[in-house]
Image (cartoon, rainbow, N blue to C red; front, side, top):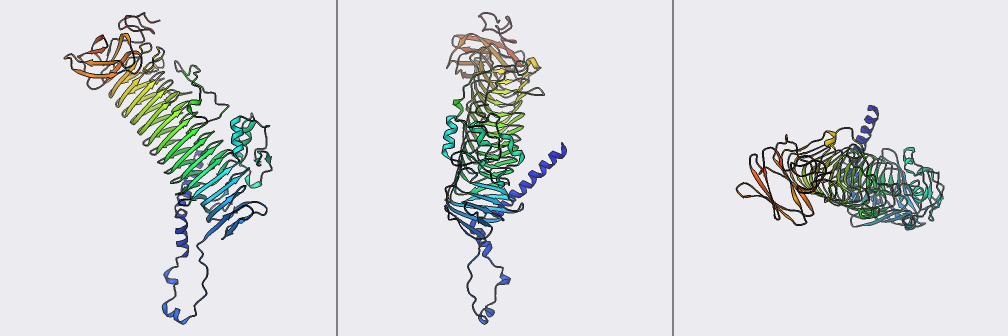
Length: 619
């Protein structure tokens, strides 16, 4: 086990070092030409020597750049390191260097088969390559591959055809194909694979046993741009990618993106890497029928404007709840995605860090998904999801930034959720925050230490299948309008506790499942159940014993229960809660004051799940 992780760490380190080497390649055509043509001063002839010698004939300047002009049946190459395969519109690059490409191939490709230590840079300046049954650019072997988009240029790379996408959308099926090395011709029929394109064994695991059109596609060439070497895409031009066979852009190692302007559409994943995805800057517009941006390991988003649309969008998914017990009292929902596969917006199976950028996601699946630790420290995220807004299988930490989940099933989900800072707003069809998930080995937790949190939930507002702890921050929960959910919900049946030790809290909902903070909480909180229901736009006023206003807020939906906390509430004081014609006095003698104890029923009356005081006792 240690050896395996050590090898993985070494591989990632080597990939990072290789990517650093791109900086030397990334100076562009002019810098490369300047460095190649500059002669050391010690080698320049003296003026006297020039007078004594006859002038030598001028030789053409060699800037070291290989220029490739693409045209159907007439590819021109000026320079070293590249060749054209007879009878095919295919350019093969066999050594490191800078290759400057222009022109169009209606059914061709560029293949890189350099030495494992070679750094290869492709400068695209008005390139349009379509490959009917292969990748438009395929890097079989190199130390690193850099694709530079020349300033002001427009470039197009397509694998497959629009007919593939149309057939996919219509749900057409084909006979299952067992050959996992296949490529497709223009009609979508399997043809013999070239030996250089045979996938490595670990690349064959994606195929579906059910066959059909999607199965056929994902067994074929991997992407419009497919690199087995670390891949770096940069430049001040634009790139339009159509991945009609499977993915859009894929690296079998690390993938770094910056400054580029990329528009992408794919039947499979949009942008995909095995080891690492890093986005520093640039503009990305992605519509994928798989995951938009994904990696088998880690992802780091530092900047850029990223717009994502997966599948047919969040609202195409029926918000149907299938209840089951995921641990005591832990409702789980299992979306059936076998027909569509994974259609997440941003997906990292390892760690995910978002520290900047403007990210807009409309996803049929999770908008943001992480397999281990997800940390959000900055950026602006506008998210809509057919499942979870932000999800982590293990831990989710908010340290800053702005996150707005406008549409989803559940807003924020992970076994452990911590909010230290940031602005978080979620509107959900079920729970706002849910500390639980499909499986957890230790008691789940929601901990809010700071930041601004707003939840508008149809299910539980802040829900933990373990502990819910509020130490700071400003929290407003507009909870459910049904009695089977609560604004604040803990896993009391699992030994979980509701603790309010600081911060400012307003939580509104119904009393049916209402939970009261523990007496050991370090800050006063007050839980109040009114005898009658209040409606939308009802105002709740809180005054102290001197009739001074302490707090005023407005409900946005039907309810009968409120819970408040803040440093302005003190022990040994009496507060009056007024809503409409009803006023209730609460004497604070403990840090968990109120007219409600336990589940349901009127204050001081029968327990259980029930209605407001004055109504029928709980059932």
